[in-house]
Length: 599
Image (cartoon, rainbow, N blue to C red; front, side, top):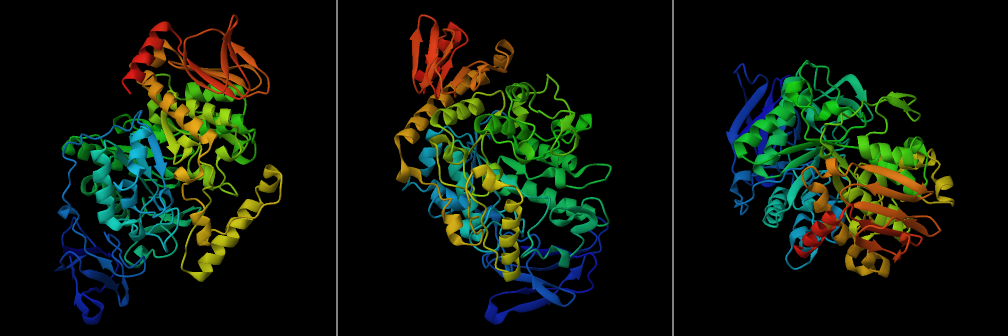
């Protein structure tokens, strides 16, 4: 590998390389080319060689483009030959993100071992379980290195590397190869809006950050000030490398509303065009999915039409509307949600706030979604790492929702007109929590995270919501992270088994919602015939009785049942906490039977 590093303001850059007992130190040469100002180059290094850079007699520091940090975020980088891996996924033609069934996974708690290899180890059922669940795209929470063993990954540093306790870069390649062999696509959650506070040495090399804007994490990534051209290139190159060297299929971009960019050509549009160009060259679909709270369809508008060119975006409003209806919670940003009118609107229009007044923000928010915009461009869920983990106890909806409400939740996500996402374990009613956890190695930062988390939760009135005194889990205690490890077969129950069976039936019927013209022939709507007795209308109709009284619906061909449902002279009688899926026509019922026989 030819050693290169961008350090535009430095007057002296040296590379330290080799084993600790016999390190060599060699000055780098400043590049003179006009198209690469500020770059320095040095000797060729063999794969496996450890190295770091000294900048103006400070350091040595890890390489900002380090592909491998085997000793942690503060130590030397190691040369990694990404091209040496022998891929077996030649037959993989890619996976379009639109309409795919996403499954969000935190690598460290998805298995007891918390590694990439454990996910696809043939000696266990993990990969078999993913296949049985019909997962089409696994979405891994951030995997860039962060301090210690445990963490969510949103405080990652050394962006180009892969967290070593998970298995490092070679482990990620093995996982992607195995998942593609199983015909499962891979989406990586990447964080371009900030880097973590511990182990981030990029500022020692150049203007990666600017104080021209501020974010919740302090200074922002430099996308529009002096030197921003190379910073933008740093991020774009990272994305392209993940698609090309690691064969990933999609990237989920964290909180893009925190990317501050006043340049004439927005960074996201630049990234979109670069990814589209690579997709054409590789001849497989490559997707970009943005998380944003701005409710703005410009994100998914093509760059040629003045948009930012994202493939899809998360719609938190659908989550908020469904969660508040099912749970009755109305605190914080949930204040405007919870009614059947709200639930109906988000299922038809994706956004509740589409230019309407947001009480939480104190102003009008969002923009309307055209009726012609493909609803698959909105990723929706009933639970994800944020909505679960940012609760005081990290409790999942399944910890408090009745079995029928959980069944209804699964049906409302999977049988929606949107692109569905499940949070790991949701398909089987997992009740173990997913609290916030970290393992910072800086004592001051450790205290700040612990005390900051307690202050944050204290201000949100969680004890009033839970109706009891609570003890906030210590994010720095390894036991907090271990409490989130999926239970799998250890804590099975009749309810979880019933939910697993129900999930399988719902998933098989999802094919009817994907047929061309399905939502034109059966327009989406959500109605309520009585309090907590509701219907999702579409290619598959969902009737849910979440009240404490029996409820009757008109007769229709039954496709699946959860709870107690009987056929009477008057129609379909649902007992409390029951859900039934019915076909809107005899033809659709026959299609459903064919789908079921096809597996």
